[in-house]
Length: 333
Image 1 (cartoon, rainbow, N blue to C red):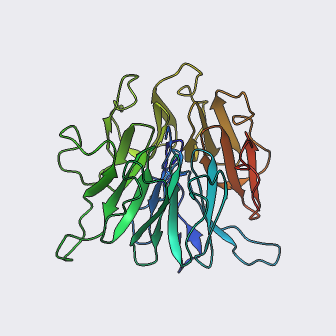
Image 2: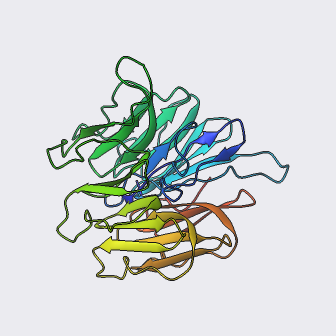
């Protein structure tokens, strides 16, 4: 989830790299901003989404021995999860609904919501755990290429048509709110991102479509072509084709007022936003009472944002988190 809209990326097991979260046309990482989108190998470039809470994911990290350890990172509202290079999952942080207790198995992507988590197995099948109060953990059958969790709902991009013939790229959603006539007519997307009560998707031609609550303008994207999109609590941001950022929606804490520069990845929290610049450094803006918008130094390859915490994967494979740690969400194992 990003807390914001997040998207999650998948690991390309052949190359050893993971997609960049909502950023590359996406991830993630992210409830408000919960539910980053997740993409799987074979998906469109840039899938792997940017966070919403759901954070973004990027290339796999490497340990001191050169072994790739972490492939994907995603943030829920108050918990964080990673997909290791071997496909196993690890989560930490708030676990009152079991959202940080992942199942065994091999996975290629993960996305966190407010109090639940969903992941894509190697074959693209969805698996969810945690709260199911609103049906947000009622995983749909089928094979999928991208995934995004909001606070009480989730959406995924189908890999195949119902009869299994050809690519589909249509959306399947579950939980509350249920899909309505306000959703995109043709529903074809490369990747998606989910916020608290809105979602945005990147179409194959690079155009954006958003739907859901838009009282702050969070579901009214600008025109143009993009390579990534991410949703936060009540705001959204996208990376244009030239690498520059544009944000829309709630800007009470300047979370929708991005700095200049060119970016490769995005992760949006409830009221803060972060991005990875082309030089690998992280820039954050917006509300910062817990330090969630005060990034650490260094070069990063992936980033994910929760409600009021942020985690990043450094190029050396180290996971670094900052912001609130009330539930241990910023203390990776």
